[in-house]
Image (cartoon, rainbow, N blue to C red):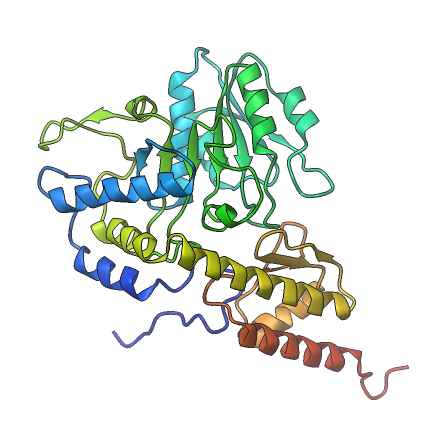
Length: 361
């Protein structure tokens, strides 16, 4: 096979990044191990325990339960599954913001549960009054997002926790992207800030682990028991994961990255990424675009669709928000030089678009 993987030098909208060198090396060493069979592969099973301990430290949970998932989608589906199994009603519902990840729609379809979507406010966060109006005695789960995929916003997690408890529902926080930058901000988002029951937090995003390496955290082991199924032909008696067989590459790379970078390395990376986002937002505003203030290292701006398409034709890997804005995620691989080159191409395209064609009136 002669094909080469995608280079990252023009990737500006992905929430995945190049793995840290120590994470890459660890992934290669443990590629053929299976943490889904801890009796056969005890070393990777022990490393998974280390991964959950480190994720718990990052997310403010002293005695965490959980496992390394394939990503945020699996963690979110499992959180909904836990809530459904614990619900004391035959027709449970789940309440979340319109900024919630599309994986929750998958979860609702797979699990046969009603998904109630609440609009966001003018700041792109969930509208709390809308949540209060949507919950009832059959609500099994309230979902908050800590680092939305379109605008990088953080829902008011403590307030969502209060609403969830008022109807005896669980609280899940989707911090798949934001979980590795939020510890260095003033936001209230994790288990120590609110009565969070479960959380999605992905080492393979801002954590710089190799794909796939997501994370599901639970406040207690008992919550994971809701997911357990018997595994009669394995040495372990039950399994709570969704995928069963998993490569140990994600587990090992997550541990390697976190041991290498938490907390100082992640802090310096957050500062660099946030400075890059602020620089880009300022550059776009100076060019007349309306920009959503980058609360986290993610920039959204009302660049015309035609210009976005032209930039893509020039090789830039960029995407749009649901309402059509340009969306740039300042991941660890995104440098100031990359952003300056991007803005330079944007300028040239806009100048070209403004020059009248011969014969036009």
